[in-house]
Image (tube, rainbow, N blue to C red; front, side, top):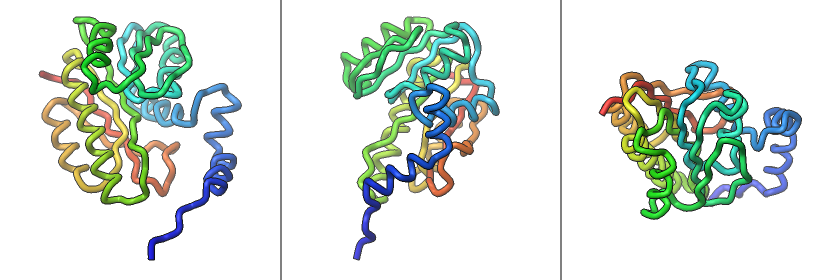
Length: 207
């Protein structure tokens, strides 16, 4: 017998009690995910004035929001998502699937021929609750994000993406090491303790 799924009401209750959800509301952030990027940035010092960033799976926009506020608008961000996202200063948003040729072309045009300094991905698939289905879907997304990073990053650039530990994870980390001088796996405090979610942080891209 399969385990009963948690009801939507229990999920809402957990959200309401989550200290990061409460803090995000109080401080005006678009989602609790902002604290994951903040904690990664505190360890890695990813952000520098004048940088160009790509934010994959950007909606509702808390990562782009964090960068614009941290750098006081001294950054250019190209954000892409299937879902709509409210406007942010210094953020150029493309709605659509970045695998679509037209969407990809729009993104490349906005990035420009000089390339980007940082590619970020907080993408995750719609969760079915079946690990044998969800894990391959999540690995497919991170592999696409890494492929995108290789296409648009400047030499020396960085890459941050959400990854779920499981089948294919070790191979993905090894693959990233083929293109970056330093690769770390970080679990921010804002990631829920019971989640398999971690973040791959890759620095110093080389062609």
